[in-house]
Length: 290
Length: 273
Image 1 (tube, each protein chain N blue to C red):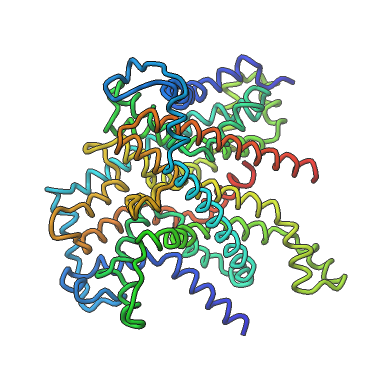
Image 2 (tube, one colour):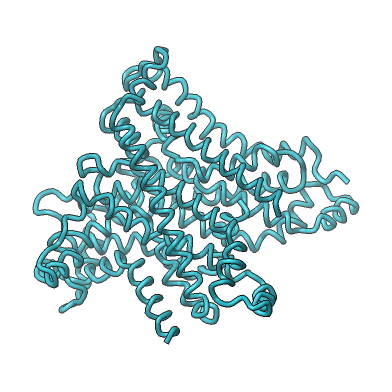
């Protein structure tokens, strides 16, 4: 029986589709048009088509590549760190958490706090006079590094991002790990598989799909990072903390370089489509296997 | 032995991950004088003066306005997303329409850096007069919330046996009636989770608040950063800490109250999407 006919289906979809067209479709077109135009804040309504000059500007801009490299490194390193620590915690703490679910609460709290707010909080945590971290480092070691200067900022931001988002990977792994049926473990134990063999030969392969998904989600979120970096450093430190998102924001708001900002947006859009396509391809291959 | 080790690892993880919140909470109860003399993690003379001054002295920074703006924009952004996603989810779960193209596209939205759309949206808002309005901010937060709402609703509806719909149809119910009487009661339990998760996401959003508001509609995340831009004399860390705690409190409290449910939806969205 046809439960929902074609016309009704379309009717039910139409509010969502219209909304998306207005708030994403229209902006996408504006992006494309502006990216091949000469446009300033004065000529917003009458942009003059001028070819691919904006793209040349962006692709030959050293800072664009610096920002891309920052985002790529930041995304990969934080995703890896979050997944490794999250996996360790999920497995190591499993006996503890299984019986006491309330212990999950403090491990979940970081996910509830706005990244922008966390960025602001670290201004205090790392502040040379008011912050406890430099305070104790001075007290114990007689020295404290400048956490946010050009040399250290990247590492500092990686640690901050990792501390906030490891819980996300941890939660996914915890769920997947707890969902492994006990008879699988028992059967493996009967066959003589002990701790390490059980982990590497049985358990990890079983939660591998979750590992891959968590890595990709965390990579994508790390790649487009904006809030906490902007709130913490204002993207200062000599441009060493400028992610791609911050690059676009600054090109537009600080420099008024609309064409360049928009062209960078289009480049970023294409890049994310490529990543998403790869992810989807990976996902469908996985489904065929199982 | 291993048990003790597990507890130690748990404690270290919990403290390290929540460290900024812990430090800010402690600092918010210190007087300005104590902060300048003692940056450590203990308080000699706890005081509520920071909270009092932040909540009562609104001449320069109106924290009540920021809280109100965040609440309103998050409400719009969550409820509208749910209202748009619910009928769409029904069509996607029960017909061929939208399943192939629209659904994966919307789900993947979660992974697209939204800064891509920010510049044209800024211009569009300028034309429409939506800059610095709560409604304008709420509309953008809707975009942020649509993917998860749609995933949750589609999954929930897909779990309803088709036979129920068929039985309703046989009894002569229209599609709209089926939606209201058969689907809605079954999906209703998913509503609070979707709402709370969406509300937290919307409340914590920063980029669009930063770009699209300047004074009247500034949300809490952006407003909190104003407390650091204080002119002269540097930052007043005590009041700034109180502001950060107040701003972080609503999502944290709601989140911890509902952490089991949120946990479920988070993993559902991630794994099934």
